[in-house]
Each structure stands twice: as structure tokens, then as C-alpha cells.
Length: 371
Image 1 (cartoon, rainbow, N blue to C red):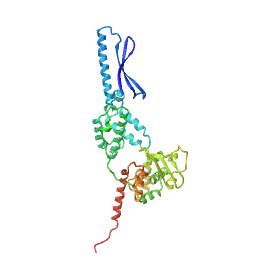
Image 2: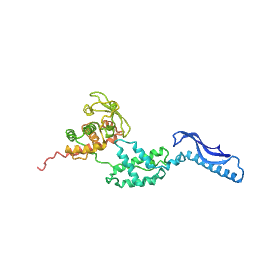
Image 3: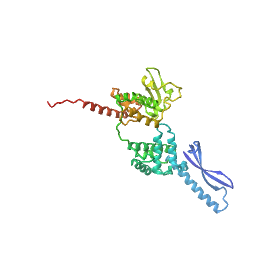
């Protein structure tokens, strides 16, 4: 790209100075192609005295310095001059806007990630305030497990990692939008989540839960459907009838995963299909009365009624599906594909659970060998 200093006649015998870019660039404010950057300075077309001549000389020198600076910035692929005014705007509001686009079952986590950043930096944090030091200090803050909000409950290490990952994703987006000069996403490492015990239901517990009455049938149907298919809550929540295909003995779901955006063609059993209820129009949601916040309360009461003391969340039903599939002999590659994992290594965590169960089983048979 070449930058040229040009002049344009204006009123009172003056000429305005501007920079001409070739080829044109996409203007960050309008989203349209633009070739001009107005410098908001001028020279006299025909200077009348020494003062006006001096003005012209100094102004032209300033304009030339700006032109050379722009040319160098372009060669270094630094377009910060284009978005200076934008970078003075609120990063927190930008973060909040990104969170609002995640309206749905995962919105709570996005909303909390915004609130934790505000608790750390205040509501006035700008794009201009972000740098490596800021990001590292925020990482230290969120790893201290601060407690905010009405619940005043400290967050876990993995929750902190999740909130910080969302922060990094937003600064990555801001850099792509030319609101940040530096790619802080690349400069600042994320927080690696710790391995945790993945709770799940045994087949007898799963059967016990299915046989127990639940106060909300939509929650019961969705939970059992997750345990029979391995689907996340977000995908079940968004599932529409147009994505449910096939006929008896050959039902399958054709959809894109909410979390990974990966296209998925998932076979489901006739029993799983029976939980979906009456078929509605193609654009209608399958589980119409499902609510994440309502589900958490109802699920716990249902587990209590079934006398299951394990700490089970809805996501644990996905773990249940994976664990029971492996325990019944399904190979790990197939389970990985059924879960929609992009890498089989992600699925290997469940094999550790199976190994632990095998060890427990091995120790259940004991003989008295004293004689």
C-alpha cells in the first residue's frame, strides 16, 4: 500500500491536506472502502507574507512526517492510526456486547466473566488501557478465587480458567477488529484447566433416576435424552425438529454443536427418540419449556427423590453416556465421534474412569488364604 500527501482547495485561498491510500482500506468506523485520511490541517495557496510562508513550511513538514509514519506503520502491518478514536472507547462495553450475543444456556458464564473483569478494572476500562501487564494482573486476580455478587462465593480454579479464556477470546476479537494494536491473545497465555473427577451415574443409578417421578417432565425428558445420546445441554436446548431425521430403527440428528460449531450427524436409538414427544413444525424447538436455571433446581430435587447422593449436574449425564458406552465395550474412537470430539485425546479422560472401576472390581473378590 502506498501513502501519498495530497492537497484540496478549500475556502479563503487555502488548501486542505490529506493522505491518499492506494489500494483502499476498509474503514473501521463505516465498514466501507476508503482511500482518504483527512489531516485537518491546511496551507495557504498563495502566501502573502513571511508568516504565512513559515506556516506553509512547517505545516508541510508536519504532513510529510505523518505520511512517512503512516507508510512505516503499514509496512509493519500496524493500522493503529485508523482506530485511535475507537480505542478510547470502553472495552468493558465491547465485552458485554460480545456476551449478549451468547444469549442462551451458556449466557450465565459469559455474564459472570464480564462482571469479574468489571470487579477488577472498573467500568471505565478502555481498549487503550489493555496491555500485557494488565492481562497478567487480571490473571492473578481471577486466580485468587475472588467472591463477587450476592452469593459471595469463591470460584473454583477451573471456573477462573473458563472466565479468563472468555476474556482472551474477546481481546482476540478486538485485535481482529483493529481496536487493539497488539495481539495480546498471542502474548498472554491462558490458564490450563486442572483435571477433575468426572462424576457419572452407573447403569443402575441411571435406571433408578429414570424410574423416579420428576416434578418437571421437560427436564426429565431432556436429562434422560442427554444420558442416551451424550448431547450437551446447549445442543438439547437449541435442538429443532428439522434437525431430527430418519424413521424407526434409523433415527439420527443432523446439527451443528453450539460449543464447537462442528457439524454432527448423530444416530440415536428409538428409545431416545421416544423422549422427544409429539413432532411439531420444522422450525419449532423440540424441548420448548426447557430453562437452564429451572433445570438446575429441578434436577437436584429429582436426584434427591431417587436417593442418589452424588453431586450430579446436567453435564454429568454426558459423562454418564461416555462412561457407560466404554464400559459396555464400545471402542474409544466411536465414542469420540458420538460425542463430537475433534480429537480422540479429549475422550481418553473417560478411559481413566473405566480403569478405576476395573481396579475396584478386581478388589471385590477376596479369599481367606490363612490356612
